[in-house]
Image: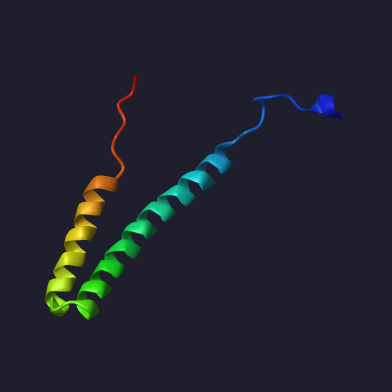
Length: 76
């Protein structure tokens, strides 16, 4: 039974794509949650008001998008 396994013979494309999906959802979900928490905190806990809080949330979202987007990797 133990001799049926051969290391490196298994197709791992599904596991790789599932891991990639999980990482992407965690990354973008964290950015959305951070922007939402900043917006709500500024809106209700400071004198910033709705417009100022919304603009700050958009700036955080835009900056996070620019930092966390997928970059093309050069082929070696």
